[in-house]
Amino acid sequence: MNREELEAQMQRQPFVPLRLHLRDHRKFDVPFNHVIVFRSRDFILFKGVKKEGSRVAKGYEVIPYDQIDRILPNRGGTGRRRKAS
Image (tube, rainbow, N blue to C red):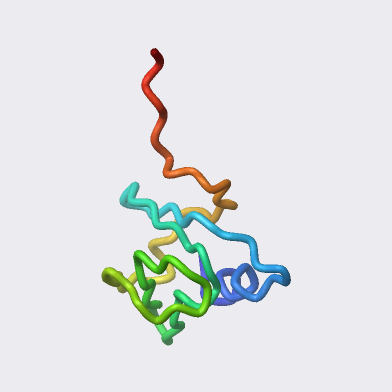
């Protein structure tokens, strides 16, 4: 994956929340387009942002573009299944 492909996803109108799947099997949700800051070789992803436009984050990750395996729409779940009762 390269910077241009990620930027295209982030500039979609209306923005569609994303889930980034990395080559090391980690997954990160991108709920809003302002939580990513693009740099030349990598990007900063601010984690835990709860509201659009908020500048409050619980942390961040620095991710090289070549570590992205795929980008999928985030359907709003946490990725965890509920236990059957």
